[in-house]
Image 1 (tube, rainbow, N blue to C red):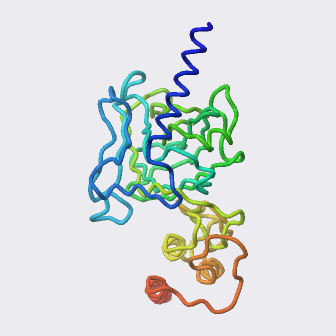
Image 2 (image 1 turned 45 degrees about the vertical axis):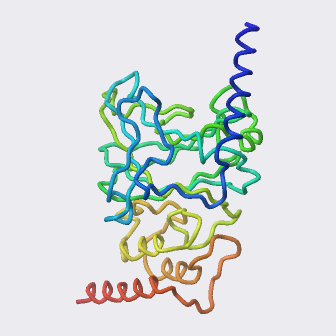
Image 3 (image 1 turned 180 degrees about the horizontal axis):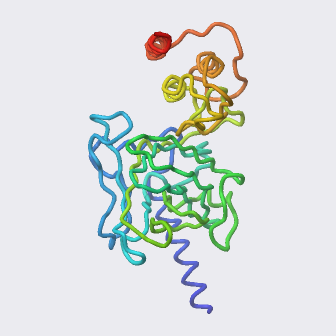
Length: 304
């Protein structure tokens, strides 16, 4: 018993030392996989299908690469769990760096939903985020935001010292698991397990303001093109009968999606939280102006 305790302690110290020697986490860092490599993401030496770069599969389409992680359809053993971990640029002191959330673009090409979590392992134990339920997307991308605080993280082992882990993180993971865990899980339905895939892009270290910006419908932390696209692509949709559109995860609309939702985006374009702007003049960015022209075309077609 004593020997096992000493061994566990030495492993923790060794992991901490490795974390100190690795590239430190920095606010605003992004893994976009445009260099053609997995950028340090792996699934272990014995995994038969390690993370790889999928060309032209990212949310921007052609020329935008993404990270592909996958399982082999087995119930147990190497390759059975949908997960990837990083032990290089995502290690270090999240608190000192001002990183309070992880933003990531996700696409689920499977026929069943996935429960996506981020996991941090550090000196204070392992912590898994609340699950982000990712519906089957058929090529559609969704932006997920994972707050790194006591409200958004759950202890995944017997240790429960979140400040210590956030100050000394030596393993960072993205996994699928419907249960709170630091390990990924096989993908299946009704007990039937099958080979699965997950596309990941633009993993970003962000600082999330306390108050979410009005108009940030996709929960990305900023009112931007993705929010405007949600409004334009679903203009006139009756959410009471057709449901809330995929990817609309904050400030859920009631009734028809129309001018009220558009005004919130235009008035708060580019903001990242704090006191929202409920009025006044807003000068759209070039991309926004083009989208407003597009909206005019949508409305004219609807009335023809």
